Length: 189
Ligand SMILES: C[S@@+](CC[C@H](N)C(=O)[O-])C[C@H]1O[C@@H](n2cnc3c(N)ncnc32)[C@H](O)[C@@H]1O
Image 1 (cartoon, rainbow, N blue to C red):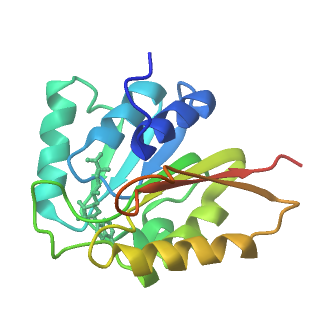
Image 2: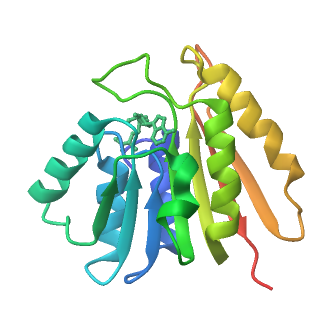
């Protein structure tokens, strides 16, 4: 049942179409752990989730949530920047999730930054298996988020349309610029 149509919720609905037990996937911005938990439950104990965050407090909160929900087994928590995706992950993966911005209930000055995000996304494009997906939720209404969202969005048309399907989803009649979802699918063959 769909409870609302926020970008984060629609991201999970779309991801659900692609996620399978046993897959290897990435949460590039673990934060409070909700996306990591969602991924861990989808890929199950035979799967592997790599969850990154630069803030130790985010890693601690994610760990606590995973333990509470009894789905910590498949998750490797990495207290490092997602600019180092390919240093930490050697094989290919089937899904990668970005939820940009600041840690809710945390330090609003520590936000994802356009250059780091783009560097990470470029590595994600290479790590992803054909048929895999990348979900990016961007926050143009937050301080600093506007510039980052624009840079990420402006990069999308550079992706070869023979290799990538790129979609966007945003509420257009919101009072202030609403968060939006960019959803990338790597074509097979
Ligand atoms: C909006 S929150 C993520 C929310 C999270 N996905 C959840 O479900 O609760 C964004 C997170 O990105 C993290 N972050 C910022 N820059 C980062 C970077 N370069 N590498 C990894 N994480 C980063 C922040 O510390 C923050 O916790």
